[in-house]
Image 1 (spheres, rainbow over the protein chains, first blue to last red):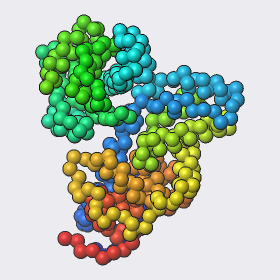
Image 2 (image 1 turned 120 degrees about the horizontal axis):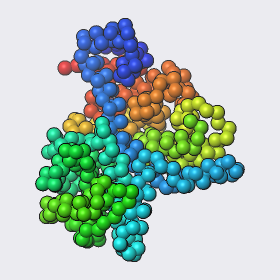
Image 3 (image 1 turned 45 degrees about the horizontal axis):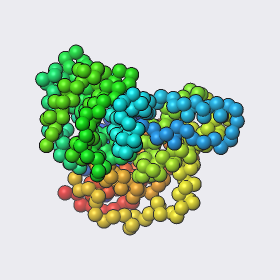
Image 4 (image 1 turned 135 degrees about the horizontal axis):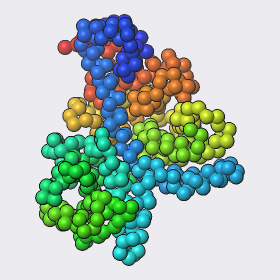
Length: 263
Length: 172
């Protein structure tokens, strides 16, 4: 075992990255079969790639901070100014589009501005609406962990949020659990559970731990561009139920969620 | 590809890479902001090509300058690495903070190459251009980064591959 493998760094790395083809790949496969401990090492190298992508994937889905969309000019010019104006107007990029949902949603809600400013409610509605707008249209990857692994899903999200979570059952309303995902947010992690009817209508439930001082509230409602959001605060958690639905049809579902999650 | 919209569309990718590179969300966004400012400043000079590689190259240069301007704590000797593996076993997937910590224990030049290949999935040639070194150097940095990160994450000792320092080890 004292000699290294008869392959170059370039070949070993290319094998790990799935970029080694043809004869050399076959030769390395054969050599690894005869040298299993080397095989394990290269498999670990490959797993590092997977871990990196999984670990940092949430960053891709975060809302882009406003300061990055409004970078100040270093070299002012007419064209540059025009371009920056375009940036500041908020070109909709992925999750960042959700900012608009949140802002407008609150303008149309009945909350007095002071109440909005006093709590993190705007953040909650915004994050929930962003997450709904981003993930609910997904056909291939709507959730990170599917409902077939519900126990694992709940344990994982509970661990990441640092507190035990429960998943409401909404079958009485025709919604079955699809699964969930972890959402990264500046204020701390959140969890999203997604439900679907037989007709493919989707609801998402957003849950995050709140700052101390947020006491329980009743239901609050916000709506924008056809996405309805019921949200409330209870025992240190913020909840938001979002769907392309009406206030009337979403309310009974929100009541069921609230009832099931009440300690 | 030459509209500001294309630049905006790159921001999530830049943030992801910067997040992994710096191990710190606020520092990462500072780096992205500096990169975007420089990109906007140079925009009128830029010829359409590979926008992502162009941005990554600017981010590389800014990152390297930042390291030079602070103390060179990122570059460590082998002896400075933790004796105890960060995580003995992989159970439910790697924790983000464990991975962050292990990445930060790599020399910056190795971390950068590993992330550009493993996370950003760029070609070795593109990574060589971005980091301004020959492809051969990219490959040896990559091997060292992988061997060392594996050691940090699993506690496994590296094999004497072509790049790692030869060492005797009994394989059970």
